[in-house]
Amino acid sequence: DCRPTAKARKRSRSPTGNPHLAFSASASLTEKPPAFQQPTQLISFSYTPERVLEFTDSALRYFVDPPRNAQLSHAYDRWERRPEGRARIDGLLCALSAARAKRHPALLAGFGVVAWRGVITRILTAPYEEREGWDLNVMYVDGVLYFEEHLSEARLREKNDIEPRHRIQTYFGYAFESYCTSDSPGATNVPQTPGDPPGWGGDVNTNVQWCSVVRTKLGDTRMVIGGEVDCVRGKYTGATDTFVELKTSLVIRGPHDEVKFEKKLLKFYMQSFLLGVPEILVGFRTPAGQVTTTQVFKTVEIPRLVRGKPHAWDPAVCLRWGGAFLDFLQAHVKGRPATDVWRVRFTPGTGVELRVLDAAEVKDVVAEEERVGFL
Ligand code: 0WD
Ligand code: CA
Image (cartoon, rainbow, N blue to C red; front, side):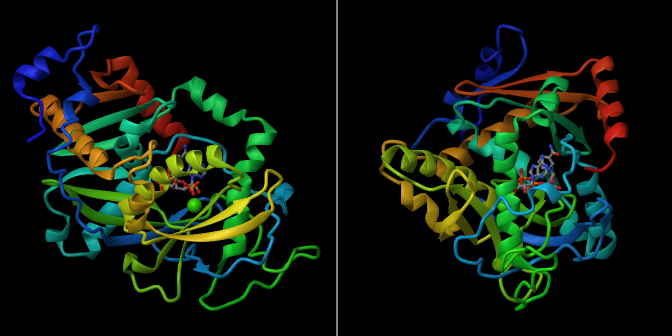
């Protein structure tokens, strides 16, 4: 049992007096990590080009082999870009009520956590995160923890004002998705606009997304997790076993790059593992955005690739931390009014701190929610 004892919790107050969970509290390496149950899909949905959520698979894409030496800067000037906002949980909640109406209610009972996959990825990879801190809003209603990313106004501005040099790198990832997917199974991509290169799957509109909502379990905690799925291989059956995640990464030129890539694999691994995505295709690109090679990674085999190396990571550490994190939250929010909104702040290398938001801060959260609508 890696839960901190009541005594340990009392001791682990930060200088601010807020409850605090340090990595060291979940660090016992001999303990068996909590089990993670194979995810099964509850429902899927699509965001249209106008960013309208609909319960169809209109945004579902099918995998095709990308052309050789694909150029990822293509059609950058035609990118329909969604402004950076906060990833609100509304869409997921909407999908959850649709699933409730459609599916057997027993499938949806007894949940302890509802969150977007990206949030759970951040939580589980925190023990290895060296640079980027994050904040979450947490609500606890009828025994369920709802997590939502919180970006400060400053972080939001930062994300919207990113340098063109960095913005195009983000675009490279979307362009790779265009080359690797088509809108019907088995179809090859036929260029639509004069000047499009062979295999171009259509211009990038980042409003469009296909999302899958799954049920799973970490230790004793049942979870509902939603996330974007890039495409499926072959036919779509409603199971997660044909899902494919697409990534781009800089070509590996030496041992230093290799270490960087292998550290990055933790995020690739965890992100795909959480939705039950079995396969990740990485396009290795030059700094100017030309794909030189592609490589398929089987998600379950990734941890073995880094095992024993000096910069190795271990998924067991992440799961143990995840279990301790959920226990910590539940211990502190249980019995408190459902109207309370909590803020979790993660500091790299240290751990997390929990505090309850004051009335003005809660008002801000609600106002943001109304301003941004579905994201
Ligand atoms: O607007 C925002 N700040 C964010 C919105 C941040 C993170 C997610 N989201 C949205 C997603 O668009 C989706 O509708 O929340 C929903 C759930 O996403 P998720 O699957 O939980 O997100 P995550 O695992 O963090 O990222 C999955 C994909 C990314 O793929 P790569 O291969 O880069 O990991 O979602 C996309 C991206 O394609 N994505 C975004 N698209 C537009 N704006 C953003 C963003 N800020 N973040 C991730
Ligand atoms: Ca992707």
